[in-house]
Structures are given as C-alpha cells and as structure tokens.
Image 1 (cartoon, rainbow, N blue to C red):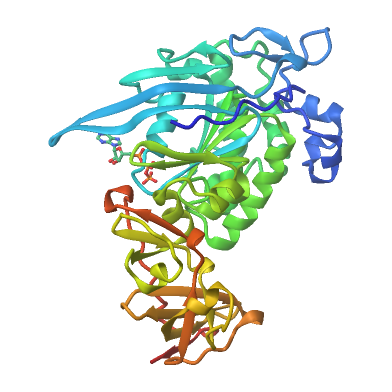
Image 2: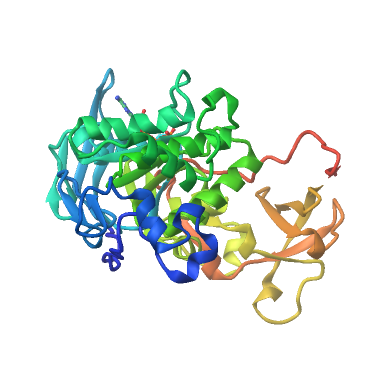
Length: 440
Ligand SMILES: Nc1ncnc2c1ncn2[C@@H]1O[C@H](COP(=O)(O)OP(=O)(O)OP(=O)(O)O)[C@@H](O)[C@H]1O
C-alpha cells in the first residue's frame, strides 16, 4: 500500500491565517490585512491575551497553536451486509493526509470516495482500522466531536431561513455544544459572509440566490463551525459548466488564503487537478495511487490510473502498433494514451518511426477550439487523436496515415486490472453550430 509523502510542514499561522504575504492580491476583503483576517474569524474577543480561537475541546488557544488537522488512517476497512453477502466498500486503506491543503479523492462512481469521507468524519463507523487526527485516535469518537464541516453537491441549506440565519445556524450549533464561549452569531455570520464575498445578501432566502451563490453560503456555514476538517463532496456537481469553473477558481483562491485541511471528493479529473495539491485515486474501495496531478498524469502506477486519467485506448498486445514498437508483454492487452501515438501522412524513412503501421482516418470532428480524428488501425482498433485548432494537420476522412508509438507508451494489463475499460469517447452525434462532422 502506498503512503502519502510525509506531512509537509504545518503552516500554523492560525486556523484562518493567511498563507503568505505574496497572496495579498488574492485575498477576500475580510482577509486583506492580517489584523482583519484574525478579526474576521476568531471567536468573540473575550480574552485579553491577544488573538484567540478555540481548539477542538472548546478551550481558548492562541492563534499560533491552531492549524489544519493532520489525518492518518491505517488498515481502514468498511464492509456492508447486502443480500448477496458481504460487500467491501473500503478495503485496507492506509494513508496520511497532509494538513492545510486540499486533497482530492478521485475515482469513478462507486469507488468508495463518499464512504471514505463518512468514515473519517464519523458519519459512518469502521469495520476495522484506525483513524487519527493530529496523532489522537478518533476512531470511536462520535461525529459531533470530530468537528468536521461539509459542503455537499445539493447545498443542503434551510430554505425557510435567510442566508444570514443559515450561517448563524452553524455558529449556534457550535455554541450549544459548548464550543463557543460567547455567542455573537450575527457578527460572526456577517464576517463569514464577507469572507465568501456575499456581504449585502444576508437577508435573502436561498431561492433568491444563484447556484454558485448558494454554494458559497454552504461553504460559509460549514466554516462557521470552525471545522478541524472540511469535506467537499462533489461540491460543484449541481452547477452548470461556466458557474462551476468560476466557483472553482474562486474556491481555489479562498482556500489558498486560509489554513484548513480540506478533503474533496470528485470524479472530475480536471477539478481534482485544478484544486488539489495531492490526489488519491480510488478504485473499488482501494487506493491505486497518491500523488500530485503531474505525478499521476505523467507516471500512472497502475493500468487503472492510466486508463482513468487519460482515456486510453485498449489494444490487443499482438496489435502491429504494439509489436512494431518492440514492446513485449505476456499479458493479453495493452493501454495506450493516444497522445503518445504519433500519426504521419508519410511514413518516416529513418528513426524508430520508420516502423509506423498504416491506419485510416474514419471520422473528423471540428469542435471549433479542437479537431478530433478517429483513426482505425488495421486490426480494427480505434484511436482518438485530438489537436488544438491551430495545429490541425488537416487529414482527410478515408486518408491512409502511419502510426507509431514508442515502447514506453504502452502498459500491459489483464482485464481484472480495470474497473471499466474505456473505449474511445463516442463522437458527438448532434451537430451544434460550431461543430462540423465528416464521415467516411
Ligand atoms: N449502506 C450501504 N450498504 C451497501 N453498500 C453500500 C452502502 N453504502 C455504500 N455502499 C456501496 O459502497 C460502494 C462505494 O460507495 P460510495 O458512495 O463511497 O462511492 P463513491 O465513490 O462516493 O461514488 P459516487 O461518486 O457515485 O458518489 C458502492 O458500491 C456503494 O453501492
């Protein structure tokens, strides 16, 4: 089992302290000056001993002692009893989550992302294994004592409460549990509204907000708890593509300014790559790989990761493209990322590519910003080559081309290695205005 790299130094500048003066231009209003950052999010100023906040036990602590929680799990397993017998949703997972950054759980539907989050947050109980927060075993601690914040896909706001009341609800819960000494919920909610750049909208009801604004309210409410850990479960899933991108960019900036350990579950690779410093790839309840976006894209460690992250094509290992590259394997199939396959109008006369194999252009789709060619190898296997419009090689449908891939482009596997074997993406059936579609 692969473990995450050792924890990075915990930048303990306060739970919501700025991460660096160089980020000044990115900070939301409430965080623009160190003083106002503290003022915005520390507890009510009852203490005379400088900047203060609450620790997990409700004791006042110095801002210097606060920071994102470090999570470690060891031998984590979750079984469910089903009609067909025992189903293992999380299967022997051991890893460390680096504090004060966003870690993405990336995997297809049903791979165990939500279950993993539920176990860490205490919403679900483990079958076996251990969970620690900052070295303290929390495996048997009830959910409310783990102090986690959640943002879900479907907002989960109270529709009959105003925006401000929704956020105050989070503060009040914390107060009721004795975790806030002084209750100045309104003041604190207003500070949070400013943090998520919705000041002035506190009197609105959720129905009077856009989806993106609602999700900001949900984030403000979850931060009102001053969570030790923040869970984002497909937080942008209900938003349209444009709003999703905007909110993602905004969230990335916000998160870069506050110290909090954040765990994001997503099946969207772009989202994981864009937001997370570290990505944990899940498949069938197991961890396939842990690394930065670059590490996972550049050096996939398993066939599943290669397939999932690159929309690779599956070829028989005796395909001529494979054999001519001098890649050898005893396994029946190989994966190849079409980006690693070069196609030429004329077969090169020297270098390894002189062993290029013939192939035929079957389809050409012009998406406007990108042109896609579906190329068929002699054995009938398809590869999807994509080019930015400016680099369109302008192949004709029916044209014979020559394809070559170096041995390193291939990864062999047996079918059990993959949950899903992706075929080249179906080409668009409809033809929007900016899309032209040629067929042989
Ligand atoms: N209470 C339960 N009883 C039985 N099986 C369950 C239960 N909860 C989850 N599972 C199964 O555990 C597996 C992992 O589910 P989980 O919700 O963690 O996946 P996921 O990666 O979050 O998927 P999605 O992206 O669709 O939310 C699934 O096969 C699911 O059906």
